[in-house]
Image (cartoon, rainbow, N blue to C red; front, side, top):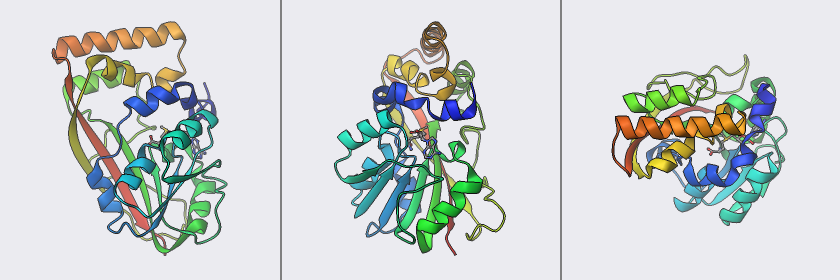
Length: 247
Ligand SMILES: C[S@@+](CC[C@H](N)C(=O)[O-])C[C@H]1O[C@@H](n2cnc3c(N)ncnc32)[C@H](O)[C@@H]1O
């Protein structure tokens, strides 16, 4: 399975994705956007988890750009506050200097940074923020680490190993100041079956055969029963965020 094929794999599970994947920890959005009187581009918006969180915090104008038709259909249906557009990070359907913030959640690793970075710089107003974030079940908890092994997690696809202080290298000459990062955490109750099903929304599992996907879920249920032993399960989540400002 090539990376472009994996990048396009999410639509097959769009409903489960929207129901099961973690939205960002609210404090992460506040760290990126101290003011709500802004226009924000949610790039690679998927089913709209971030767009809806932004609308809920009162952000004035949310534009969501997403290339996958199935993901975008869920996004448009469930995020009435957002302007929803088809497009990619490498070809953003917005005018120059038209947004105050570009946020990419669990999506930057699917972009071509050499082409996406100048596009992001083009649509951002000077002083605007680029915020890259990843939300994930926190593998510093042992049983979550065991689930990540079953999920065949690819650390290139998430910063799930990161601690505060991690860095993102933009291409040389990108018109951004130096970056800074933070990790925010929270805990959420989830049904054990939903935790197992959440693994099926990651590209490493989505691109397996149906039998292999079923085996992953079965193994996950076994780990949760053995290691956690409760249903519902209190799941530790983290959002890792990196930000830099447009010069
Ligand atoms: C893991 S999902 C993240 C979705 C959403 N941002 C979230 O936090 O739930 C990755 C998303 O990036 C989209 N994507 C993949 N390649 C992209 C590209 N080159 N430009 C923009 N979006 C892309 C996929 O279609 C998918 O919806």
